[in-house]
Length: 205
Image 1 (cartoon, rainbow, N blue to C red):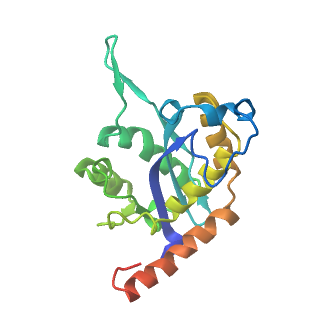
Image 2 (tube, rainbow, N blue to C red; image 1 turned 135 degrees about the horizontal axis):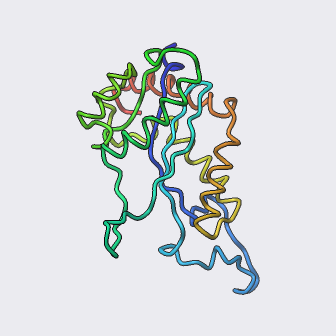
């Protein structure tokens, strides 16, 4: 049904300290792997964006950590509407165009972040012919399939013990590329079931 025409997108912060459910046991402090001895606030992290659908997986988009202001000072990089339209959406449209079906075939989900729902962003998507889901419910990560897929990615990246920024980005890209349609498709189909439960319970999933 329409669930298989939906594309779910989201930003995500991947950290080298995301151990998931793993535990480390060591007889002495010297036996503890270096990554487990690193202070969490010094651990490498990276912000990424991606989208998934039935038989569809976008490329990962990596965001820089710092923003140069033309002087010696740098500030934390922020994703705004202009950058979203320049860096993220063209990448998505290129990936969708490989399907050979018109963009109007798809229904695009993005949450209510200001860069997503900016007037210029929605107009951009409308002009490209890509329909969007309006009024996505806030604070509902359990409803979006890609939120659940992030957990899978986080677990796999964690098992590679990245200790540097470069290692973290390399692990994230390689583990994302390994994800198959057979692994992703059940997340998409599960959305229909969750939606039915929400309707039956009047929004209480």
